[in-house]
Length: 131
Image (cartoon, rainbow, N blue to C red; front, side):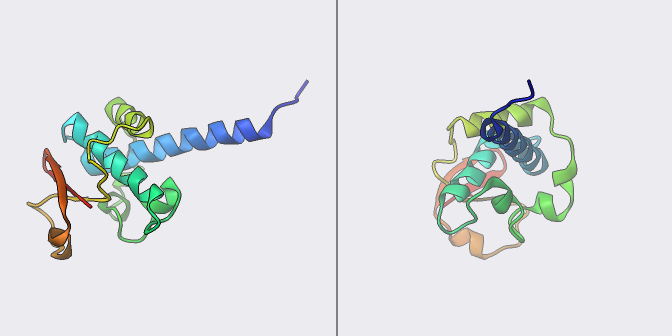
């Protein structure tokens, strides 16, 4: 009859778009890293959403100026593989191998001196996760 519940349609659509955006960030930032590290990158995004120090949406966090190299260098526009999509779903389902981190970096490539001052929670692959 063409009758539908717009709130559930919108919610499903935004869930799907959040999953896709999170998968794109994971793929752009952490492809080639261990699976746990890919989930941890997704968890960092979600930890930022929950923190009052960052925007309160996934897109707000992802597109915050200077937050992710994958956004500034265009890798955010790559099509994520199935591993990145699964990692995004695991992060959305609550798995946080970063132990509450809101930052991560690659010690071998970072030029940011400030990031070294952040308390480390764990190192996974080439990424160090911090609070």
